[in-house]
Image 1: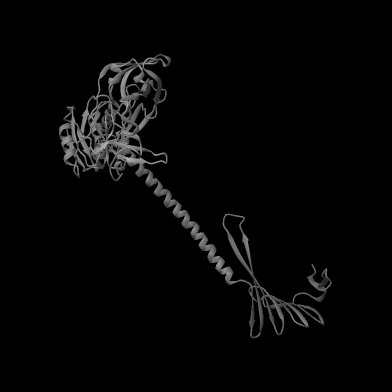
Image 2: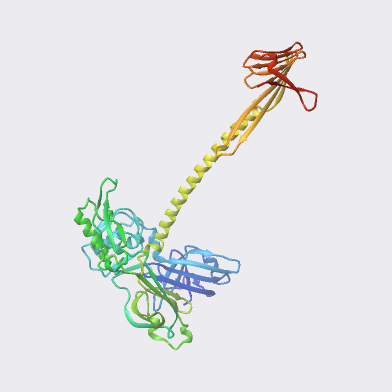
Amino acid sequence: MIPILFKGDATTFTTNGIGRLTDVISCEVVEERNGEFTLEMVIATTTPHFDQLKCGNIIVAVPYKNGNRQAFEINEITRPLNQQVTVRATHISYRGSFIPVSPHESVGMTNTIADLLSNSMVANPFSLVSDFTNETSTYIQNVPKSFRACLGGTDGSLLDTFASSGAGEFKWDNFNISFLMHRGQDRGVQYRYAKNITDIEQTEDFTNTLSGVLPYYQNQDGSVVVYGDIQYAPNHTSFEVERIGVLDLSDKFDFVPSLSQLNQAGYDYIQNADINTLIQSIALSFIDLSESEITGALEDVNLCDTVTVIYTPLNVSFKSKVIKTTWDVLRERYTSIEIGQPKSNIAKTLVGIQNEIIQTGNRLVSIVRSINYEIGEVRQTITTIEERQDTIEENQSSITQRADGIELRVSQTESNLEDSNDRISELENRVVISAEDTKFMSADDDSYVSIKYNEIQLVVEGQAQVDITSEGIKSNSYQAGDWMLQPSNSGKSFNIFRKG
């Protein structure tokens, strides 16, 4: 089929819309059971209507064998330099992710469907039908959710409430949604290696497999916590090591449950959740059917159909559901089919991705706050250093002329960075030159050496300790014999030492 372009506000897709996109290089649709439903197209910039190819507009294509035209809303356009544009679009049902539904409770499938539509807080263009006959289960929605999240992929969703042990499959037909017990059927299709498949890849996933659960309940303020007994899966003895998951059932009760009620809820969960089996899937790659004599039933298979796979090299022979298909829109054939047990991942379509973005955003906010705190610490440290630098600069060396003489001020800064805490200490000495003498003074002004033309005096803490004159050496505490003079190496000066 040649894809057709429509305006974003179109609601029916039986015409040619804006026009057909004739110069499409490739176009594929991927659909996953209760999950992804997307289109990716590569198109030349020379194609007609290229100027109308914009986000929000709609591409219509047939997504699988014998399918109806389906609308895909453009949400991403990549324009490289090679004049080949990649366009990505999501099924029109993804618009349900932007329709909020208010909190409510409903009993039974019929009432739940009606209430989901009536509690939509903006116009809801979708219809919803189901072949489930369960009219006793209660749908409980305590917080606002998007319409699509109400359907599946979140705790307490329509799929979670009414489907059991792997049952329940959605079929999306533009604005019409069907919630079915079984979407597909067994058409008798067989896939055999070297006959109609070229490659097979088997995957086993043990990540979320459990042998039992420990149920618990916690009220909103956390003041009441009730936990039950471990509820084991029927096959838990086949596990080499027990794998027990902690199961939060707080949303299942609007009252504090008894131990027996909590245990029963845990038992029901592990019986119906299908979490005690190994998730297996097999991806198949097909021969080019356009060059093959094999036709008919092989291409009649659709999503959720049951098929038989026979692959002797891996000793694989079993029946299973088709859980993912990739359809070539232009050539109207499958390019790959995945078979096996799906995970409940409808929310991974858009709602789950949005939640992941929000969670990642919260983590980034936390990181940014931490970085800002660290920056604040660094700025505070820099400010402290600058303040210390200002103090140092205020005490720089200087020569000051005074009325009674000249003052020489010398400031010395020492940095000690040997440990993690920077220390900046300031040592100040002054030389004061006056008409009477020259004084080499300490910081406290009480200790100095005074040199006059006929006398040298050493003063410590305001008291003269040594006085050298032409008459000799006098000391407050020592006699002249306690001192000695030693010429310097230059012979132009001498040093005074106290003996002992």
